[in-house]
Amino acid sequence: MIAFVSGPVAALAPTTAVIEVGGVGMAVQCTPDTIAGLRIGESAKLATSLVVREDSLTLYGFADDDERQVFELLQTASGVGPRLAQAMLGVHRPDALRVAVSTGDEKALMAVPGIGKKGAQKLLLELKDKLGAPLGASGMVGAQRAAAAAGPAPWSEQLAAALIGLGYAAREAEEAVSAVAPQAEAALAETGSAPVPQLLRAALQTLNRAR
Image 1 (spheres, rainbow, N blue to C red):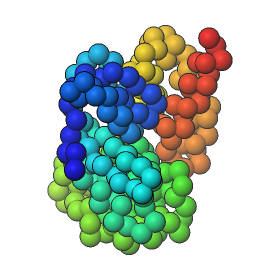
Image 2 (tube, rainbow, N blue to C red; image 1 turned 90 degrees about the vertical axis):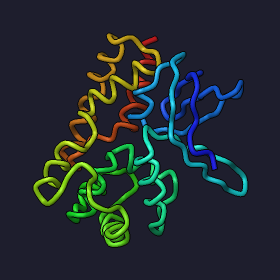
Image 3 (cartoon, one colour; image 1 turned 30 degrees about the vertical axis):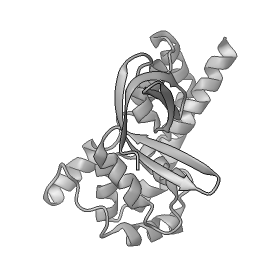
C-alpha cells in the first residue's frame, strides 16, 4: 500500500493532482478542498489510499491521515465505493460526517450527490458504530459546535481557492464564483449545502467560454 506521496506538485486539474515522486508523476484523485490547498511547483505531502480493481489502479489523496481513514471506513458500508466516499468528503469534512452520523442527520448525507433519502437512512445505520465521535468535540455541546464549525468553509471560499490553485487569477476566480452563485443558492435552498465539485465544473466552463 502507498501510505503517502511527497514531492513537488507538477500539475493540477479539478479532481486530480500530479505529484512528482522520484522523477515519476503520480496522479492522485483529490477533493476540490484538497486541490485548493496545493500550488504547482510547491512541495506537498498527501496521505493516500490505493484502490485496486481488475482493470485499474487508482490512488486517492487526502490532506491528512484522518481524512484517509474516514474514506476507507465509509467504503465498509454496502453500496459505497471510492467515488462516493470521496464525494462525501468533498461535501463534508471528517468531523462533520461523524456529527451527521452520530445525530442521525439525513439531510447532511442527502447533500452529497448520489445519496437519496433511503440511501442516507441506510448509511446512518451502517456507519453508526464505525466513524466514532467527532475528534474535536466531546458531548452533545461539542457535537453541535462541530456541526457548525467542522463542515467545509463557505462554498465561495472553497471554489475561489480551488480556481486559484488551478492557476486562475484572483479576479477570474471572483468572476467565476459570481457566475455560479445562482446555482449555489438554489442548491442551498433545496438541500442546505452547495456542491463544490459541481460548482467547480460549472465555474471552469464559464472561464473557458470567457477565454
